[in-house]
Image (tube, rainbow, N blue to C red):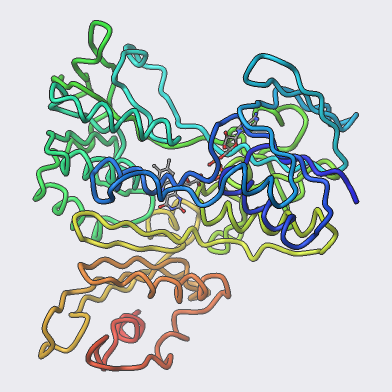
Amino acid sequence: MSKILLVGANHAGTAAANTILDNYPGSELTIVDRNDNISYLGCGTALWIGRQISGSEGLFYSSAEALAAKGAKVCMETEVEFVDFGAKTAAARTKDGGVLSLSYDKLILAMGSLPIIPKIPGIELENIQTVKLFQDGRQANALLDNPEIKTVAVIGAGYIGVELAEAVRRRGRRALLFEAESTSLASYYDESLTADMDKVLGDNGVELHFGERVQSFKGDKKVSGVVTDKGEYQIDMAIMAIGFRPNASLAAGHLDTIGNGAISVDLHQRTSLPDVYAIGDCASIYSNALRGWTYIALATNAVRSGIVAAHNVCGTPLESSGVQGANGISIFGYNMVSAGLSEKAAKKAGFSPLVTDYAALQKPAFMANNNEVKLRIVYDSGTRRVLGAQMASYENISMCIHMFSLAIEEGVTLDKLKLLDIFFLPHFNQPYNYITMAALNAK
Ligand SMILES: Cc1cc2nc3c(=O)[nH]c(=O)nc-3n(C[C@H](O)[C@H](O)[C@H](O)COP(=O)(O)OP(=O)(O)OC[C@H]3O[C@@H](n4cnc5c(N)ncnc54)[C@H](O)[C@@H]3O)c2cc1C
């Protein structure tokens, strides 16, 4: 049995560890993580801070003890500082400052990602908060318990910034949402859909400062102001949510990387060195929409990549199917889901995309509790391959995007959707389903 060393045990690492321990009994697995907790669901941070759930207790699904009980050697609060890829050894620093020397036959790197912190004046002031770790959630929560915190600037209107802006409003504070792009959620959706989300945010009291770039923070010890290219605003707290970068410094200069520094992997999660695998947010990922390698930091991708790596490490060949970046968001009850590329993203990637839009009530008009659903399908004008889909509604339309995810994965053309067998029952949908209609109406 080979000696496996796993660096990082959040979503990707935990998935890899469980796959190894559950399927390959007797494996010699050492897990090293610098944090004091495992498997924190960051997706729950906004729900917790916004008091939509009662506390943080349910936001973990594994623990060091659970992995140790299955047979792993688990070293928490221990940071791997150096890997000698030639000698197959690693040096780690323990909580009390000691050095741990480790050796491996197979190495799985699962160091995840780090929040992007811009180097702008005032960024070091107190009460400027990132939201990545459980500890960050706890700190943000404690700050919002302080009645002196009345106005909060959220920087970045991607899905995390939008969720946090909602949470701040739910805590009864002023929320100023700053975004350099002209809409929220600009990486995943086109403006015909984000306009509705922006309205939902505005209607619920989030003050939108879009097309506005934050340049500095002001304050004496604690943050008291934010300065943008358009103005200056008094604030008591800021939440930084402008994105994440791969945490791959251990690999720098040793393993091939893609443009943003993520470790380059193949469909088996193998890196450019034999016996070294990378998974989750620190690694590249294959996009079926792009038909190329890219970077998409999502827990779902992390888990799948962990499963794939674990089987390959233990001798069972398994290929990743690639991903579509399928994602969802629910803000003040308004739901948006997407998979693949928006029109904007498709153009940026060099496609000549066409779109077909359709909006209809979810159910026949005679049914109560019925809301409009918006659907946009993006497809390639030449091949007519589906490149992406976006949906929005107060209805729960989340399950529908999985069909589009599979369509993108399988290279399905838009025309295939025209006569797809879609069931009808008034409780759920219309006889002329919006997927059928969007496809039939397409150019
Ligand atoms: C607020 C928030 C909300 C989110 N919501 C969603 C969502 O709804 N859906 C979704 O799919 N994704 C969501 N994500 C993204 C998701 O959390 C990440 O994609 C996921 O955490 C990636 O998992 P990972 O294991 O690759 O990396 P990480 O979660 O970053 O974990 C990396 C682990 O490696 C450890 N580590 C790093 N360096 C070392 C070292 N040198 N030595 C030892 N240990 C080390 C860290 O302590 C950490 O435990 C959200 C993220 C945030 C922050």
